[in-house]
Image (cartoon, rainbow, N blue to C red; front, side, top):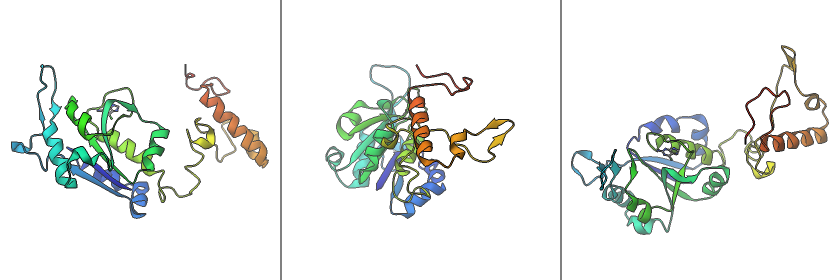
Length: 237
Ligand code: 6GU
């Protein structure tokens, strides 16, 4: 996969790409580049934003700035670029990111991710250059960079080479293997700690029973059930 992240803070991604699980995917042939939105700005002083027409608080990323950045990077008109690759604008008002969207994006040969700052993007960027707007949750971040890392992390770990064991991503939370439910609980040694025992079934060696227990726990979590002791986090509505 070929991943380009357009951002005002490309150096933030140095940390991200240095992480082991990201390195593994990059070593297996995926490319991730952080591109500085300021690098090709047509405005003086590296300016990228402006005040909103109609007034109001905050600044807006300019359409000519994003046009120049995409044009310079790809050597093609961004209006046509989006017919050949997925161009995603990160915005708190976008489509909610989930495992299904992560899987969908992991199947793409190439992704372009635009990180907003300030109040967001001039709407013409969304209308003419972008294929998707994506949000990672119903809260507002100061910019799209952390959201881009969340998205990249969730997508990259689905690619070959990301995980130590190729099966680890198949039966994880929200996957088809678990009918879209959260993952079942895990336990490891010691088998009893401070009087807290591990569920007996997991020590039974009966793989059929273990499988049924896990499917059941996963489905119960999906239904928002409390843990059996009733002292866990409150159940979902
Ligand atoms: Cl994608 N961007 C910003 N700025 N805030 C967010 C978000 C994205 N997703 C949730 N909050």
